[in-house]
Length: 241
Image (cartoon, rainbow, N blue to C red; front, side, top):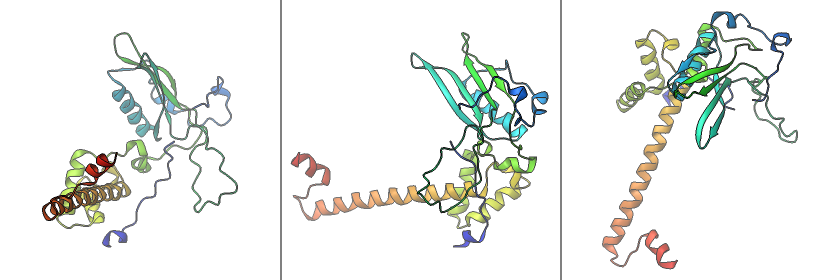
């Protein structure tokens, strides 16, 4: 396929809290402390949980780290508190030494303490009640921030353009190149080439599954016309039960 001619970006971020010290100022591994002097989110309020997540994601992009949802606490089935953290929070569980890994990936969970907590107030606003800005790892440079997972989003408009161009016979690689050219470079697209490939693959699978289901339905209808006593599997199962 022509799409294979293009290099794809390999995402090494992990999708997966309990690392919190009461003496962060003396922690020997804390770096990038200057970030806390640039912007302090403590006390900021937003209107909804979605706005809370977007606020921290936007902050993460400006600073240079990816965000992960940590914990959500409920009271009477109502979410009252939500925590977000750096994607490098916590540690990976030790793997089974008897299992042989086919690939070796960079360590992505290194116990980063950076986090934020939003609490639901009586006025239904979400307020930042805890803000830990320190990270224990290098933050992404501006040219790398396009690859941060929490910063990558395929908007409805993007999906529409991709569908149209694929329907016209354009390769996924060229489709992504077109989008990048329209916005002045891949760093401005909002998602990576791999995200584009993954979206196209999901769309293709959904079409195939829908087509298979319709083919099966058509087969049953034809069988019913040819054999009046033919029963669909559902009717047969119901009859046997």
